[in-house]
Length: 241
Image 1: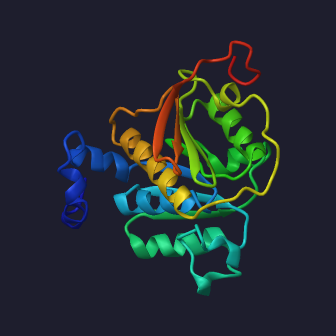
Image 2 (image 1 turned 90 degrees about the vertical axis):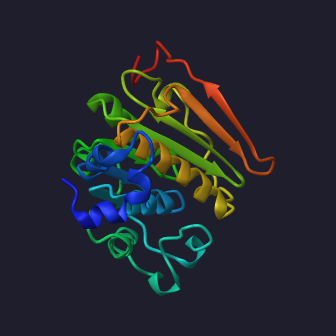
């Protein structure tokens, strides 16, 4: 049940058609695993915390440095040198002290993902490398956990809602790891894509229909274009085929 304080705090989203108090109660009881608390993870975690998601688990192994601050809005100059997940957890608790935030300072690999992620209602990919993304994807397919994927480059980004076994998995979409490089990032780009990840997450967690199952949304910020591509499962996919 929602307290009177929660009803007041979340009033503007509770009155949204299809949300209501039942949707807010579902958010309160939700458990979300966010992989990566950088450019994408900052807006995703902030909006989910502000919306009242009951348990948010943050996984990252990095330390905050000066070059992060053009896009990682959970941090400030005073945070440089700090552990990302711990600093992020403290900042999110200041935003909303009624939720549970669990910092997990760890690398994500096949040996750690089960302990780190457990069995959440939703996993959100806010990572910056495909090696760890493929680990998330394999785990999502194995455990049939919904996974929101996103990636960014400069002034562009992509987004998909992967729901095993219903939709194509990440390995269907990207069969091979793209060439490694230090990608350029305009700070607002992960803000746009991260906010869209948060929207899809909140829709799913409150029981609303999500828009990107079996689709890949592509945003080109230089042209301000949004395109959506229909995805097809690969029957020979080594992960979900």
